[in-house]
Every structure is written in structure tokens, then in C-alpha cells.
Image (cartoon, rainbow, N blue to C red):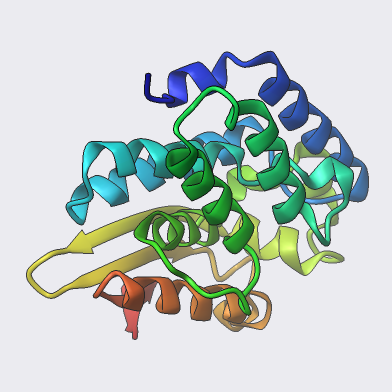
Length: 221
């Protein structure tokens, strides 16, 4: 029996890890890493995998990795990718195909560390799905009063539109953003997200694509 995202979403263990993570990161003042973020990343990972022609199993594994990638944060922010992979493996390795479980675990481990080598397409898809999620809806309501003090909240809140597009003919993966320049200067986006965009470029190149960033219809590649 193949592991499905719908099943993972109903797993009480996974639900608890996600709840604990969002509670912990909320206390630290981070943007949303709970239901909003993980569902967007899961859906975006599945969509991207489908658009670039991955098979149905890899589409499902990418979606599962997207849903579970951050759930280890409650055990420590710096190593959360390792904790999440270990928790996922403990939940499913005994009862499901080891290759499928280890593929998801490997993607989770590699999604947040630039020094880890990308060795499969599920990992590359997860990186693009996760690192592209910047939007004002990630900023918690209580933090919207302190935008001037927190650059991460300010930059996220300035993004009013976010689309991850694929142009097959040109072999481009495009992150298209609309930024409210009354809230922040686009240069601040690069100040905090340059590493993420470089990681997206690396992931896109692994898939055989060029990563393109568009801010307010200005193309950067």
C-alpha cells in the first residue's frame, strides 16, 4: 500500500508535531509555519512536480514532504530538518516501502541546508515550493503592529501576490511577486532572501530549468 498525503494529514502524530511546531515558533515570533504554510507548500510541490512531468508517486511524495518538512521545529530550530526527517521515518518506515519513506526523509533533511547535495527531483521540488512561499498572509496578526521593527515580517507583509509558474518551452521556473513598495523597498527582499533565491536556482538547475524571479513585472534571472 502506498503512503498518501490524505492519510498523513489524518495521522494524530503528525498533527501533534505540526501543532507543537507552530506553537513554538509563534512564541519565538516567527512567521506562520503551521497549517497555512505547510498546505501551501504541499500543494505547490505537487503542482510543480506534475507540471515538470514527474510520475504520480513522486508527485505524492513531494506533497508529503511539503506537508511534513517543518514539523521538527519544536525540537529545535537550527536542526529542525533532521528532527522532522527522523520523526517522519519513525512514523512510517516500519509499514511502508523504505525507498518511498527514505525519499521523503531525504527531501526533508535537504530542504533547509545549502551544503547538502540535491540527489533527487523530489528534494529539488520541495526546495522550490518551500523557499518561494513569501506572502503577507504568513505574518501573524499580532506581529503586524511591529513591521518597522522586524524586516522578515515587513518583507513578507509587503508581498501581496505570489505565483510559482513553469514555462516548459523556455525551461523556466518563475517566482512572480507583487511587492507593495509603500511597505518595503524590494532591496530588502534580497537582503533577507538572497540565500533562498540562490537555493531555488540550484534546485531549478537540478531539474534542468532556469530559475527566474519577477518582482512587480521586473524580470531577474
